[in-house]
Length: 265
Image 1 (cartoon, rainbow, N blue to C red):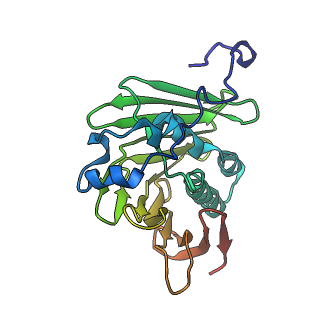
Image 2: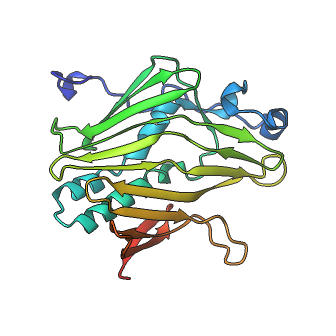
Image 3: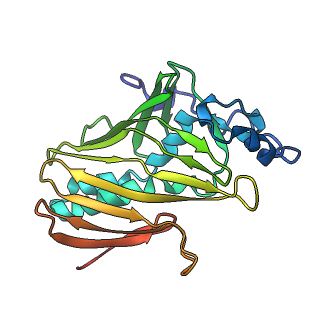
């Protein structure tokens, strides 16, 4: 932890310790043929298929847009706060665009701490279980205040089939806004990587993300649309904000690769 320490006393990393290995001679699809029907955490893979980061480091990229949480903190309109929280939840997966390499599995008890001079937050994570592999994290403002806190645990589970690989992370993600005495919760989305054996690899997020404000029971329900051959639209998000009586308050739409927009209903 950084309590009692000054950032200028720390030697912060500016780049990864090793580069990505050359994969030009590696056939991922040949390897994946042996993995059909198996769970990803139980499969031994060549390290050339890995990014030179652990899952703890990779997940830290999901919190780069915490300025949205700062905006939610100072906002007095509960509907607008929900819009900021929904935008943050959508932004948390944007760093995964075109990232088809697998991070390394962390060791049990391994920790990772992320602090950067140009970003206003501090992120800490730990591998708290090995079988099954569970990672816990906490993110908060770097200035030591407790205006908000984003925290949770993730259990990544992936299975292979003949055509695709399906990743279904389990775990609950939570956000606490202290000034408003609010706690928001939501779960991670399902990700499918297509053309595992034949064709060009590509992936998409799909399913429903339900963000609930437990103080006033307001919800943002976001539907991540699967690829449509009719419209050729990929990465599309549509949803609504509803109150405790399920009355629609705002419409939400966009693409998780670009942004989330709010409209009147």
